[in-house]
Image 1: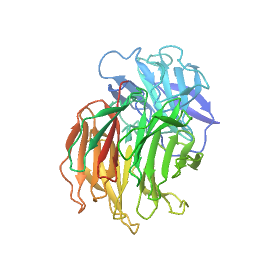
Image 2: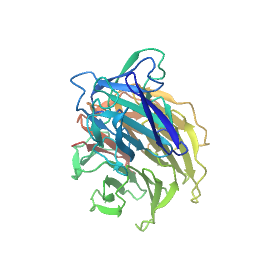
Image 3: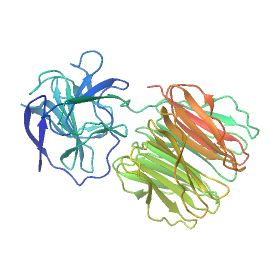
Image 4: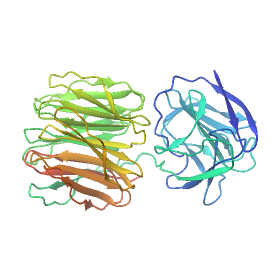
Length: 459
C-alpha cells in the first residue's frame, strides 16, 4: 500500500491509500474537462509539487462536468474530510489519476470501467477548499508526477511560487460517423465522394489493395467488431461482412502482400495488438496476439516487394516501435525507432523501390517524415508540414513510385500532397473541406488509381 498526500487550496488532506502496480508507459491523458474549453491550471507556495488546481477561464466553475482523463477503472469513489467528494482511477501499468472537491457524490462507483471523456462528477468545493475548483493529480507507481495533457507537459512542476498556465481541452470523447470514399484516377483527376458505409457509429477504418486489383476496407463498429468489404478489380463493391466480433477495438490497420494475402492488425486497450491473415482463397485465420502492451494507441503497416511486412505501433509517452515480419512469416523483436512521447498518429507506406516511408504526427509541431532504405537503414526524421492543427495522417503509394500523403486539418478538412519518384514534394492541395473529418485511409491500386476514405464525425 502506498500513501498519497493530497494538498488542496492551502490545506493538507489526510492520505488516501490504494495499491499500485509497476509503472509502464504514460497513457495519452487529456484535460479532465469539456472539449474545447480553456482552463487555468494553477499552483501556489506549499501546494505540493505537481498538484494542480483547475479553474475555467469563462463562466462559473461550480457544477462543471469532470471527465475521465483516460480510460480506466474506478478504484476509489468516496468522501474525505480534506479532499471532499473524490474519485481515483487506475489506468493500468501503475498509472492513476485523482479528482477532488466534487460538488456532490460521484457519478461512478468502485469497479466501474470508464472510457476517456466519461463524466465522473461535477466541480465543487467540498472538503478543505475555499472556492469551487478541480484539484487534479497524475500518479506513477503511487507517486505524484508532472501531469501531461494531449502529449504535452502541463508545466506545473513545483510549489516554490504561485503561478499558472492555460490549456485547452482535447477531451472530445470518441468521434464516430459514416465512411466516404473518393477516387483519384491514374491521370490525376478526382472523382466525386460517395458514401461507402452509412453506419454513423464507425470509429476507425483501414484499407489495403492486393496484386489481383481488389481493394479491401475494414471498419470498426464499437461493441460489435470489425467489418470487411471487398471492391473487385472491376470496381464492384461486395457486402460488408463481420470478421471479428470483439467490440473493444480502438484502431485497425490493413496491408496487402505480394503473395496475395491480406493482413489485419487490431488494437484492444488493456489487451494488446492482434493479428489476423486472410489467405488467397479468402479465408481468415484466427486472431493471434503479437504484442501484449496494454496501451498501444495506433498501428500502421506497410508491405515491400521482397515480401516483408513492416509494422509500426505507437505507445503514448514512449514513441514508435518497429517490427518486421519476414516473407516466411517470422517476426523479429520490436525496436523503438522514435522516442518522441508526444507523437499522436503514425502512417506508413511501402514503395516499389523497397524503401519504407514513415510519417509521425506531433501535436502543434506538425508532420515528420522518415525513410527506411531497402537495406534497412533509417534516415533522420524531417519536418515536412509544420501545421500545428493537423489531427490525423495517412499515406499510400502507387506503382509509378509516387507517394501520397493525406493530412486531416482541424476545422479545414483533408489536404493531399505528392512525393515524386525522385523524392520531390509538391504543395499540399485541399481535396475535402468537410471540417468534421476525423480519420482517413489512403490506398493505391495496381491500376494507379488512388482511393481516399474519410470518416465524418456526427457526434
